[in-house]
Length: 99
Image (cartoon, rainbow, N blue to C red; front, side):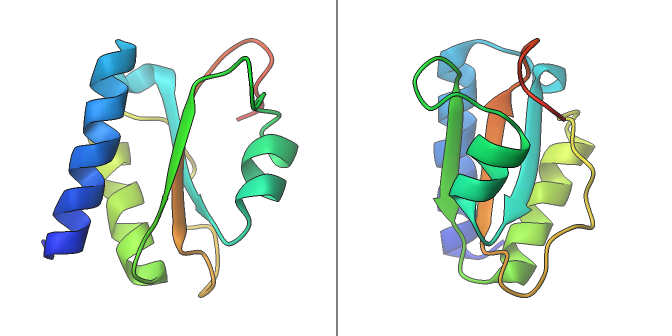
């Protein structure tokens, strides 16, 4: 893994560990537009839900990170996004979020 990828993984892992929710309780995806995807499509509350996002170097890095979280048991569709999808995001799945 590249240094940037390891750093992003460490940040996201630390956040998830601190929250205390196991991997199957998280949804992980990639997008080009955080506001639209995370807070719109997934209905994640900016103030009441638990979420994190980070900017990757490029869409390839974002897809690789997303796939690694899915292999680790996080929920998500995978294979989405486009060449502009440079953000990886994760949120705790609740009764009001939309997978």
